[in-house]
Amino acid sequence: MASDEEVLIALNSLAEVQACERCGTRVRFGDFDCSHCGADLEEAQRAWAERLVDRLKGDGRCQPAKG
Ligand SMILES: [Zn+2]
Image 1 (cartoon, rainbow, N blue to C red):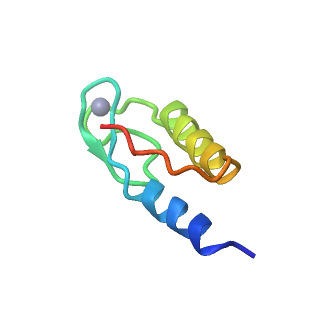
Image 2 (cartoon, rainbow, N blue to C red):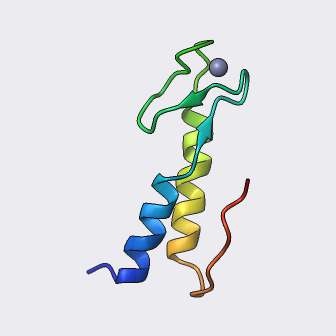
């Protein structure tokens, strides 16, 4: 069962602003292509997911969100 801290980490990750790496358009969570330029967002989403997992597996220190 997830701890309160783990739930907060997940919620904070969901609140991260995702933007297309090619054109900078903000994209909604769950989109797999940029609605503006059609760029494939899978790689950026994998990076996001890796950050989330790293935080969940982290040593308990809170890491400030970037940007
Ligand atoms: Zn784009």
